[in-house]
Structure formats: C-alpha cells, structure tokens
Amino acid sequence: MKALIACSFSLLLAGAAWAQEPPVPNPDQYYHLNPDSIAQDGVPKGEIRGPFVIPSEAYPGTQHTYWVYVPAQYDPKVPAALMVYNDGQAYMHPEADLRAHNVMDNLIYRRELPVMIGVFINPGRRPDQKEASLSDWGDRSGNRPEEYNSLNDLYARVVCDELLPKLNAEYNISKDPAQRGIAGSSSGAIAAFTVAWHRPDQFGKVLSFIGTFVNLGGRGGNKYPDMIRESPKKPLRVFLQDGRNDNRGLRRDGTYNQEYDWFYNNVRMMKALTEKGYDLNYVWGIGKHSQKHAGAILPMAMAWLWRDHEVSTRHDDLEERSFHEPK
Image 1 (cartoon, helix red, strand yellow):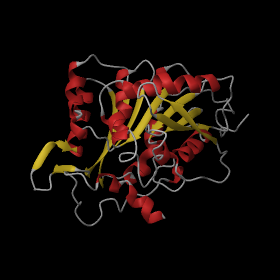
Image 2: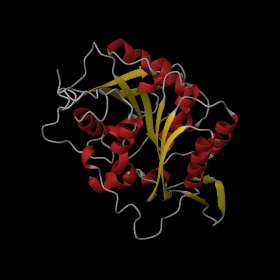
Image 3: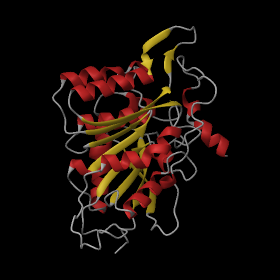
C-alpha cells in the first residue's frame, strides 16, 4: 500500500510524450515527511466533515466532492481563515505525502497559523464517473484536465460561486481575501493560481507545488509570465515550489520543447512575479514530479503565507503565550 501511494503521483504523467526518467540516484530520496505533518500526542484534533457533493453550473453535468476540516479551536462567533486544497483527496489522505489536516492541527495549536477552516475539494466528475483517488487523480476518469489546466474563469466560478456560498452558510469565514488561501499540486497548482488570478477579491494567498505552468493540452499555461507582466499587479501572496528533475520537456524522440518544461516555466513564473513586485517566496529543490519535497516544506510554506496573522505583543498576555487550546 505504501509503495503504491509513493509512486501513484508520478504515474499521473507516465504516458505523457514529454515524460522522462530522472537521473539516478532517486532525487526524492532525501525528502521526508515533515514532523508537523504527523499527528502529535496532546495536540487537539480538528474534525473532517463530509464528503459533501455540489452540482456544478460552471461545468454542467458534473459535480464536485469536498470535505471540510474544522479545527478544535473554531469559535462560530469569530471569523476564521480559510484554506482550499485542490485535489483534496490527496491533501487529506492519512498515508500520503502532505496530510494537510495534521499540519493545521499542529500549527494552529502553536499559534503559527490562525484558526482556519480547511476545504479539500476534488476535481469535477460526472455522476457515473469514479471519484479521484491516489491511484487515479481524475485525469482519466473526471474533468480534472479541463478544469485545472485552462486559464479561463470557469473553475474560479466553481470555487467562488458554488463552493463558498455553501461554506459561508455553515461557518463564520473571514471575508478578507488576505485571510483566504488556495493550494494545489501539479495541475491543481496552476488551478489554484488561476482562481486567485481571476478572483483576488476572494483569495489573496496561493500555494503552488510542482505547478504545471506549461502548455499542457495546448491550454496555454506557459502564457502566465507574460500575462503577469502585462497586467496590473494583483493583491496576491504566492509561494512556489518545483524540482530540477520535474518533467523537463524532453520528447520521446529526444527533442526538447521548452513549452513543456515544468521547471523552466516555474522559474519564469518566479521572475515575472518578482519583477512585478508580488509578495513571493519560492523554493527550488532537486526532486522530480512528486510531492515528496512538498511534504517536507508544507508547514513552513503555510506559516510563511500567514506570517502576519494577528498577534498580541503584550508581555503579560499569558493566553497568547500559551498553546491554543479549544475554548
């Protein structure tokens, strides 16, 4: 089972014409799950509620499954921050590479994150299609390629106009976009950026792991750096991660196509965001197209994104100096 989980993400692109084997030894071998991604004794555990299903008007005939993480410290009288995770099944899987619910448990308890509602949303599918899973992320059995890799605003409508109203009806979520983030890996990462790009009035933070800012399926993801430079600066804070052994645009016939070079185009994103003056952090590792590096740095990335959440500096504020226990 563990071997299947470890390799399943890499298998997503096994049939792609530009995929190639990384050099040996395995470049992911030194990346290990962060301790803050593991459940810790004595830390209050949040509750994962669901699954829930919403029909989609943006993509007629499809539906989206999602789960909601409610931290133990959630108080309905106090607006909570929000983090949405694309490919939700992978971000919440208890044996996979990220385990974001544990990260939120541990960092909220230590006051390194604000109290935060987490939402794990899967790509859309028709009712007769299988739910995305670690062995099939939805590229072959769902609407993931169209939703996640397109640059239009349709998936932003799913998140902002179909998902958020359901959440707002159940939970007291901050209306401040600076207190709302969206995350994803691979195609889920470019989808996260696209949601915030179209709707900065709703999301001010983006977490991108091994993002597919490439011309995948001819959908033009590699155009984003030019769009960033040519557009007015948006109020976004962005964290990028990729590895030097991600898919590098080598075709099966040995030719190189820069439009399909994941690492090259992530670096282009970094340069464009930097030149435009965005609030940006980034990490380039040695890894391949997997979430091993992401699992090692997810807690750090989350703490950076929310580094300016409200704190008390009074020396005698003993509540602020204590662990964040449930009320």
